[in-house]
Structures are given as structure tokens and as C-alpha cells.
Image 1 (cartoon, rainbow, N blue to C red):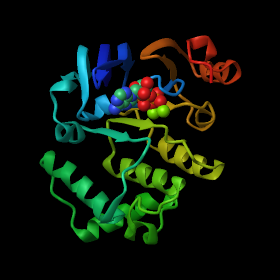
Image 2 (cartoon, protein in one colour; image 1 turned 90 degrees about the horizontal axis):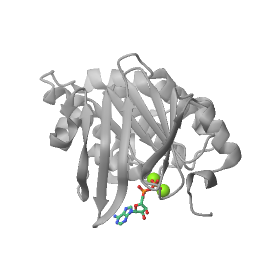
Image 3 (cartoon, rainbow, N blue to C red; image 1 turned 90 degrees about the vertical axis):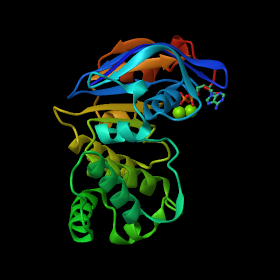
Image 4 (cartoon, rainbow, N blue to C red; image 1 turned 180 degrees about the vertical axis):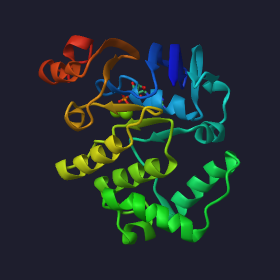
Length: 249
Ligand code: ADP
Ligand code: MG
Ligand code: MG
């Protein structure tokens, strides 16, 4: 599903990613853990195709296609979904309208018919229920005044509507209390599928008690310095990142 080879990325002329190799097959959930500043968000921004992230070496293939040649819209249409560490607030656009626009843009790009208001409402309510997203929340402006937990639940709702082939969740756990964390994790777990790959980026082991990954990678100073099974996360929880070259913190 996702094949990254020797990826080097510069931001503002400074090399942040220094040769990343990463393979995430369909059906698997991979965790990327690492200290602050190791390049986790940079990696997710490069996958999203954000401006200002210059790939100087290496390649990214998604379902066999050259991802770096694909526009942001093409990436979304092909089924890449990214949940960012800091979700965007959009005053004046309700969450409902945002979700409908996102879903119909994807359907249109795929040559599918757009959902009318009635069909969309039925679908969004069905997907919103297990995530505890109320009608009232759907009618509010996207992320404006949302609590940390509400923002993350709105993101998981978006993911569940778009049914991506590859989902990348950047620090979806930050700022969540335990109940919100469980709701988000349940939502993610319900989307596990043999034709879907997920990359869960986190600083903390706690999330991985609820979203149990198949593979754990440790990112440090722009490189993947260790790869292992789910127990690697527990090991990190005990030893911290000091052994992986993190600056003393
Ligand atoms: P993480 O998500 O692991 O905390 P980031 O990817 O956010 O790490 O940042 C990795 C490194 O890149 C950090 O040293 C950060 O200071 C640097 N960095 C991030 N964005 C920029 C930017 N726009 N300009 C310069 N340096 C940046
Ligand atoms: Mg950070
Ligand atoms: Mg980050």
C-alpha cells in the first residue's frame, strides 16, 4: 500500500528527514513513535503533499503509483486520508457541510454520483452515532470551539465517511482524556480492514494499548532507528527515548 524508500526532505533549507525506509502493507496498522522534533509530522505533511516540504532524494509509492507525482486532490481521490496533529478551524462552514463537501469531492473524482442531502444525512448519522458525534456538533462550525476530544472525534468521523485505503493519524491522542481516547481508538479499530493500511503516529505508548499495532517504528532525528512488534512500544514506555538519540528532555 505504502512504500517509502530513502526519503530525504528539507524544510526551509534544513534537512529534516534523512533517509526514511518504510513499508506498510494493506491490512496492517503501523505505529511511528518518536520524541518531539524527530520528524513525525514532517512525514505526514509530505504524504499529504503540503507546500514547503522539499523531497531531495528517495521515493514514495502508493498502491504502486508515484505519490510525489500526484496532486493533493489526486491523493485524496485515490484514498489517502490524513488526520493532522492540529486540526484546522473553519469558521462559517459547519462540520456537516464540510463532511458532505469532502465526501462528494471524492465521489466526483472517482466518477461516482454525488450524495444528495437526504442520503448524506442518513449516512453521516449512522457513522456519527458510535463516535458520540451529536447532530448539534455537526451543525457547529468545523472545529471552532471544539474541545480536543470533539476535534479528534470529528476527524475519525471524516475518516469513517471517506473509507480511505491509507489513513495516517498524527498524534490523534494528544490532549485526549481516557474516555475520548477510547472512543477514538474504537473508531480506528472498527476501520481495520484487509484492504486498508493505517499509520498511527504518537509520542506516547498509551494510545497503543487501545490501537494495537502490527509493527512499531521508532523515528529519531529524521531516521527510523528501530522497527519491531507491538512490544517495542512497551519497551519504549519503560526506557524512554534516550537510548534512541533523543535530546535530554
Ligand atoms: P515531530 O512531529 O516529531 O514533533 P516535526 O516534524 O514537527 O517533528 O519537526 C521536525 C523538525 O523539523 C523539528 O526540529 C522542527 O523544529 C523542524 N521544523 C518543522 N517545521 C519546520 C519549519 N516550517 N521550518 C523549519 N524547521 C521546521
Ligand atoms: Mg511535535
Ligand atoms: Mg508532530
